[in-house]
Length: 240
Length: 240
DNA sequence: CGAAGGGTTGATCAATTTCAATCGCGGTGG
DNA sequence: CCACCGCGATTGAAATTGATCAACCCTTCG
Image (tube, rainbow over the protein chains, first blue to last red):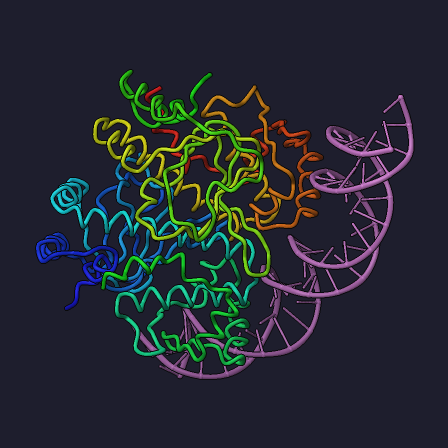
C-alpha cells in the first residue's frame, strides 16, 4: 500500500531512501477511525501531530449559534500543524469526514526526525507554507467570489491536490463529501450548493455524484473559478 | 523608541537580555515606506523576512475581475512567514496601508539567530501558530458571520492585538484604515461597512472615526461578534 | 417495511450589493 | 486668504444574491 505521506513530501523536497524509510517507520502504526469522529476537539490540549494516510478529515469550528464552519480539508498525505504543541489549547476541532486511517507522531519524534533528516524538515516547512497558501485562498474565495466561483474554485483545488498524491483517474476523483459538508466549508447553504452544482453540470464544467467528481471541462472550470494554481506551489515539485 | 517586535515576542516566550539584544540588532536598520507601497508583489521571488516596526501593512490579492481581498493585517511587531524563501514565488502581495517602518531579516540571519537563541525560535513558531489561528478565524467570520458580527469580530481582534503590544489607550486605539480597506478585508462593500458602523455606534458598542476606534462597551461588542479570544492564544503570555 | 439521511425543487424572504447623489474636509494653486 | 478639487464618508432606492421554509423523492439500512 502506497504511503501518501511519503508521496506528498516527495513532491515538496528531494527525499533519499533513508528519508523515506524514516517517514514510513514513523507512520507505521496508524489507527483507523469511523466517520464523524473527533481526532481532537476545540479546547483540548494539543497532543501528537496527526498524519492522514487514508480518508478525509477536516478542521472545523462550531459557533455559539450552532453553525459549523469547516476551515480545511485534509486528504491522504496531509498533516496537521508542526508546532502545535506550543499552544495551550486547540482553537478548533479536527474530525473525520469518512472512514480514515491516521498516524500520530509525537512532537519529540518529529523533532528528532527533522534533525536527522533535513530534507524531511524542508518538506514539512514547505507543506506548511502551502497549507497557509490554501487558507489564504479560502479567505479570498469567501470574501470576493460568488457561489458558483467558490464551488468551482474549491473543486479545482481539491482536484489538483488529489492529483498530486495520485488519487485521480483521468478527469475523475473520489470526493466522498455530502453537500452539507461542502456547504459548511464554503460558507453557503446545502440547498444553494445543490443549485450551483446543477448549474455547473448544465454548463458542462463538472458533475458531482455518488461520491466522486468528474471534471468535464477543466479549462471552463478554471475560468469560472478564476483559478490560479500558483498558490499550491507545485513548482516546488519540479524536482520529480 | 520601544521595539514592538521585541514586545510581541516577549509575549510569546521568555526572552533573556541576550535574546532581546539579538532581536534589536537584527532590526536595527529598518526602512521607511509611504502608504500603498508594495513590499513585495504577487509573482515576485520571495526575499528576506519583513518585520513591521511601525505602521500598518497588509497581505492582499487582486482577482482577475479587479476585486481586492485583504487576507491579513500586520501591525507593529508582526512579521511575515518564516520559511517563505522555500517558495518559488509569492502567491500574494504585501503592501503598506499607512506610513510604515519595516525591517528586513535575511533567511540566513534569521536561521542563525534561531539556532543561537532557542527562545526566539520558540517565540517565532508560536507567532506563526497564532497567525494561522487568525487566518482560520477570518475564514470562520467570512463563512458564518453576518456583516455586523464580522465587523465586530475584526475590531475585537485588532483591539486585543493592539493591546498586546501596548498600542491602546484605555478603550481607544489608532486604526488608520479607510472603510474601503476594511471592506476589502471583510469581503463586504464600503457602503455596507458604513451602515454597519452606524449600527454599532447606535448600539453603543463602538465608534470609529478620524483614524481611531473607541470601544464603548467591550462586553457588548464581544457578544455581538461571538468573540472567543482563545484563538489568539494569549495564555502563552502568562509568563509576563 | 419503515425510518433516516441526502439530494432536488419551488416559492418567498432577507441581507447585501449596486447605483446614484450629496456632504465634508484637507490640501492646493491662484 | 479663498475657491477648487478629490477622496472618503454618508444616505437613499432599486436590484440581486443567497438564505429560509417547505415539500417531495430516492436510496440505504436496520
